[in-house]
Length: 182
Image (tube, rainbow, N blue to C red; front, side, top):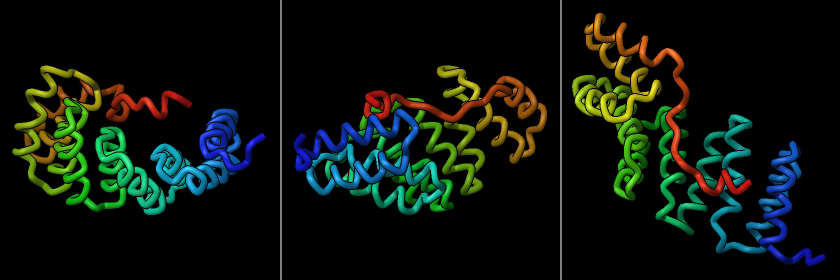
């Protein structure tokens, strides 16, 4: 009814996306961003559609537009760090995970920091982060990281135990209320 309503256009994008029309959703999110340029959700949602297509640099560009509008959204920083690692940009990824930790995210941000340390071959520092994390938050993804750190540092028996505990590894996760809203 109101083609100049950015919120309505963004909600249409969410409906498209949840019903399996990613191209239409992306176009709606772009339109919503133009109509409602102060709403960080529209570039945020674009970032996920771009990432799903494997266009991580474009996804990061969209995510950065969202972050400029809402610098306190923990999930934005976690996704930024995750995608930066996938692109091999370890230094900025570490900064993103540190920011998420500073905003109050717990074990997932620490696990992200450990991933950065592993990519930098700082194995002992990663182990120092991951050992207590594996006791306090015994998630399979934490044990996978710890097993990798042990294996790469030559502690093969410890690696076997940790990797066995992380056998059903899934990605490190965190609460993302914007994704849940869809």
